[in-house]
Length: 262
Length: 330
Image (cartoon, rainbow over all chains, first blue to last red; front, side, top):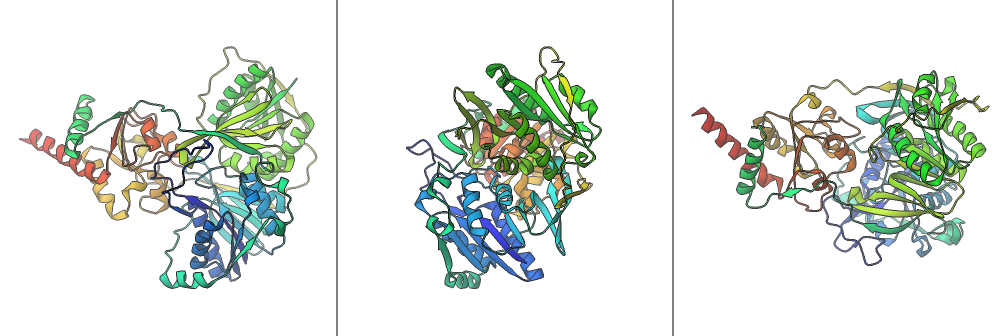
């Protein structure tokens, strides 16, 4: 099984306070911790598990600046065999569609049985790269996959539906699956693994190496261009309870009492 | 006349809420741009749905085929590509559901139609088509312009709009179309639905829920929060990351991929408020949220907010409840 995993280096924003930057089109990145996109983390783990079971190789690919090497190193430390970073200043402003084109132009020259990506990215949340890449490559795909069972030249996958339901599909290989969180439990990386990963080569490819033109990438090659970012309007005016934990607890109790909840 | 397509979504014999939400938003755009609103219905034995849709749309395109019995994005792709090429709608609206996520990007790429996914709003602004999306887990809104095109596609976030019936049923015309001659799809096959495993706890029946999220940090902290839930006569529920980590079983998950709940009291502990979770709990009677991050989206949906470490608030609350109970006993 030769598996390609597409990963993205993204800021962790679940517990961070975000500020819009001076351009109004991005967020201030200073102080944010960047790491592998959460969904991609599960995709990578799944790829490594499949390799451990069936043999083959795992290649991690990212489209991003040099900092993304940290995410690729993490992939190598976890068990990826090779890593490729596709980088060019011309890529700036590329949306999910342009990113899929960039990935396609690299992957079309590679052998693979399976491509895994995260179901979405924690930054733009578009859930577009995987299926568009599958379209370009002409291979079948399944999204939001919670279980993969390989069986010869096909895979049986469970896709997540709403309300706790799943559906089971049979998909012919080679195929592309986008992986939903919770499919597995990503492993911790050993110190040894990190040391080994530091010695592995990360292959760097640029626009000139992948056969795309400037117009295919960046804002001109994209479907979407951000006009402005803004903080979401408040839906409900929250009353903030302030004071020491004891004082806050007393206020909560009063609220619950007044509503007959205790 | 320009035409707007809404892809009706249905599963196991029922039209899904997102269908009516899409039709509501589409009606607004159709009126503004003087476009024809067309519901597109693909399936097998779905004529009854066509009648329902006709109350909401000027036209209903109905295609019935045994290959459309269960959703298979490859088959949908082939049929819709054909329809979109033929009728060239200015806009195609698909739900940002597990079906839309599977179908829309690939369809848009194949047709070379600009697509924006997971939109919470969209509009024609003169020559431009713009959308509003949420990024960074709902912490930031983005206004986005789509590349100029004859035709656009969006996927609409669930519950972004409240479904409303037209003031008068539109009595839309149902047009039954023969399925285009499509070759057999063999690369992807629907096998079966897998229902959620039977659970031990029904969180939809509880009147008090204590929901926990990423902020609970570790499985070893679960008993601390569970005690609070019990002392309030309630049940522990959670957001997705807690289930992903295996700390609580699936049947405790609140949100689009879990359960929709409406308790009398929902206490959200260390939950950031990703929209998938919020959709599952925002109609609770009283919502109290505890989170260290004052900008956590959950505070936009709460009656009361507490910006503090949950591990300081939970013990304080438990003490007060115990005191109260002790008083009652004496």
